[in-house]
Image 1 (cartoon, rainbow, N blue to C red):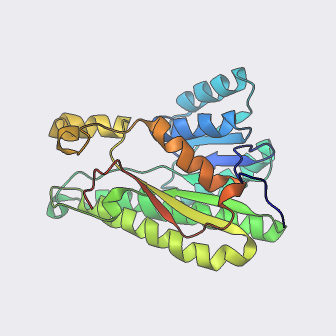
Image 2 (spheres, rainbow, N blue to C red):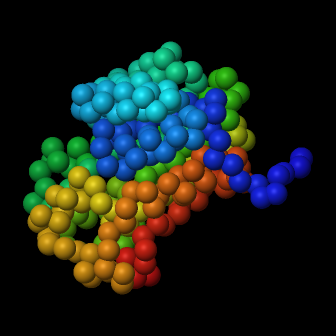
Length: 257
């Protein structure tokens, strides 16, 4: 096998990407980025009106996009949305498990319902969806790329609330590692990105509660979602063919490791 010099390409023509949590924030950015690189994008989230607006924006720029209402806590919807996306746009070859929620509470103050929801959204959903995408790819003998959005909270917790969020994101990293081994022989690469603090709707809520946390960071700034583009594109592009089971931190030194 020969490789170009340099072995880098962001051309995703012919690929279909399914993104969860695509109605705002990082998910919407991921969708726009993948579409700009030629991928057909299946946008999923609960807020269908926002998804439709984003799909229209992408189509207006010459891309291909379709919107699908999805509550990731509903296993039946998780299983059916892949087939719906494939019927509309073709076989899903890229999955971005982006949907997630914080808990922002002390562990002893969390209701059982909230515990179930955080685990359901942050861990159960990406596991079920990854397995469905992989099942279809394996049956069709097609390669696929799965990117799980973890967090630097997977590696540290300072005791100020959101313990369960940290636990679930750590589990996402381990899920990435385990599934990458199980599916390597099927040419399915499974990797993760662990962002630090980035500007988003979820971060807006945290800033309202905690004040400007960026002043505690070495560079005293939040990340812009655009600064995740290159990492996402690397993990879904041919250049990362030999990379699976990795978790890439993109945190601007915020975690102080």
